[in-house]
Length: 239
Image (cartoon, rainbow, N blue to C red; front, side):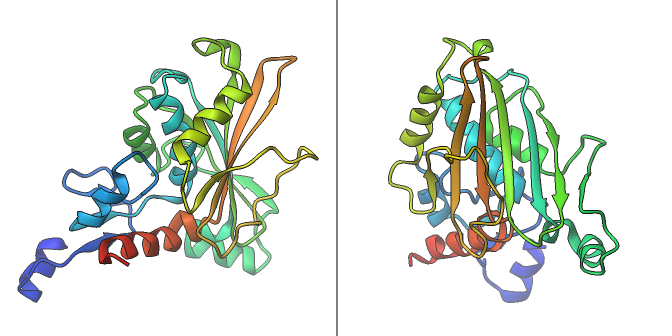
């Protein structure tokens, strides 16, 4: 496709690909500006940018800082239970929910081969494939990506405060990704950031059992799709 555009236009256009085709391809810059230091600048200079997947955005946002900080080993067994609004499931799923013929909630991709797994592996640095269990609820858009952890299985047995500090350091100064305190009622609904490019990260815990769950909340059509594309476009155009 890229070479066809070059031939037709007689020049080399700058491209943002929103599909899965180039997310792990050589020569393409991954369009998650908050991935690591220097990523936003790499996007600014890039000719070819691959826009991240929605679930992958939440998963990478949680995992990459922990891996970079040495808190989470690259071979740690990771599980990522997640839920999205039905708009992320494509035409057939959207029509089923909007016609009232779909269930209120369902797990899917239970063959454990979801298309976002390659980019999660590549851009977190994990070498052991996570078990990713997506689900869909009867709401149009919004997303929660969860990372449950047994803290006593991690090197140094980090506390929830340690995990919070790692995330805060990584995203300090970020315009769109913020690290928030856990909600006081122990609940988190998926739609609060709809129609924005924001993503919120939180750490919930119970130290009686050395348990923690890190959660990313975002709009699967915002920071998980078109919001990220516009953010990348602005970087590439110097706006």
